Length: 255
Image (cartoon, rainbow, N blue to C red; front, side, top):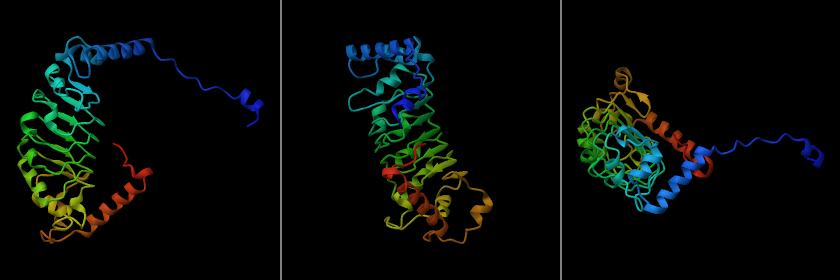
């Protein structure tokens, strides 16, 4: 465009940063600089905007457990019910410590999570666990999570039918997401696992991969044997992987 046209072009108004937001950010930086990386009571009071940390029921924050003491979150927020750590860096659930005894819902998407060891002891009240796009292979630690109702494992590294079978210990489990795991690929150790086989192992499921498990739909393919592969399920999984490969730089669509 010519200079004259540019001169008369409307300017995009950029709203100024609110003074209170800027002040809060400066105060948080000052606290972290004086106390080092971590989650002190003072830091959390400023972050949660309350002096009474026992009143905090939900927290959305990013954590790097390699340099921050993530277990202090539970120690300072004893009544926390929901915790969102999306895009943090936490390799093991044990990094969260043992003080999240009241936590019911945990989001840990894209955290580099690899281990769920001690899940039932660390999170005894857990009802919903969302850990998509991590590197979890072993699901056995979840078997003792008696209150777990919703489990999102999309895009992890589950490759063995025994891992799915171990979830039968979660007697209240009603929603499960498994798409994007190696167990649905024909190259896995025992061959691709079908949707029907998952439902045989976990008959209490009401929703599998965002699709209701209506009794009629389940019985319509009941003639498949335990080792047989449901071609429709494989086609659906192939479409998911094609959609994944079609995104820019192979990135997956975030939830």
